[in-house]
Image (tube, rainbow, N blue to C red; front, top):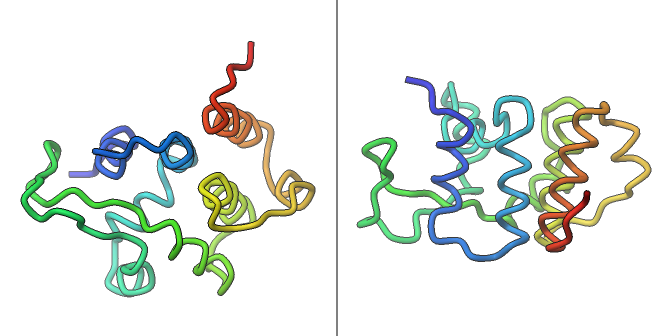
Length: 140
């Protein structure tokens, strides 16, 4: 059974109190049916799993997800930043969204002009919302 974006978000943010990590994770869950969270947590093939296995960790094997039988996994933002620096096999918009998320946590520097050029209007709105959430500023 395929996990919902909200389920994936809940799993990676269980016990996380950092506003920037929450905003970055929410951005990943809201973009393209949680494309990146699926790549990191629910890879469809072994090659994808091997490529991204270092970006998640299981901090406490005794904590189980309420959504599946496995342990809760957290994202390793430092490793996501490293992946971006190495290059990821994804579209420019997918890569741009991941780069914004990693930059919100402080693990990757972005050029905003390049990022915006790669995003569509809906994606720009997701990025704006994530920036607002990460900075604890509400946009009317």
